[in-house]
Amino acid sequence: MRRASCVLVSPPLPRPALFDLPKPASLTPHPLRAQWLDYGCSYIESDLSWRFPLLMQSVIGVVLAIGTLFLPESPRWLLDTDQDEEGMGVLADLHGDGDPEDERAQEEYREIKEGVLAEVRPPLPPLALGLSLRALAHRR
Image (cartoon, rainbow, N blue to C red; front, side, top):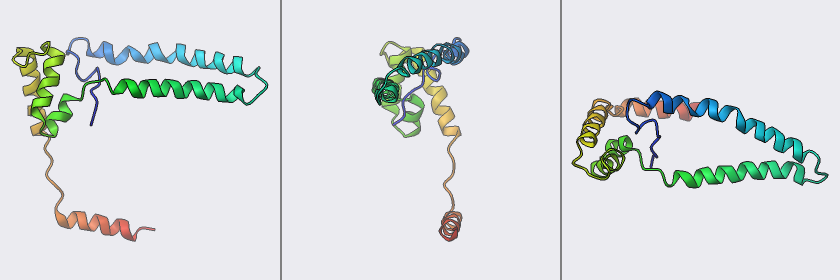
């Protein structure tokens, strides 16, 4: 299961802003906070001086991991795995306020489906697969 990125499912106009905005906004304040936290914890005379900053990083990671459960699945991945109805449902939620008959959602569906169909890769021939597995088996 793949989760959708805000850049992939956003309208075309603000995509560059959505893609570039998080970089400078997250590069400056977070490392500074982490450095001040480490500096403040350096005065602790126990193992808590290194455990507390590590715990804070773990808490943030858990919050982010739980947050990904609430993201919609990627419509492109859904269409690529032949789950067209679910993919159209996600696109309708994102572009058409839940209406699958919305023109913008239908257009996005057609664009993604055409791209997925154009990218279909032929499977490896059995001989090539056998040779590659044999080469890996004899590698030391």
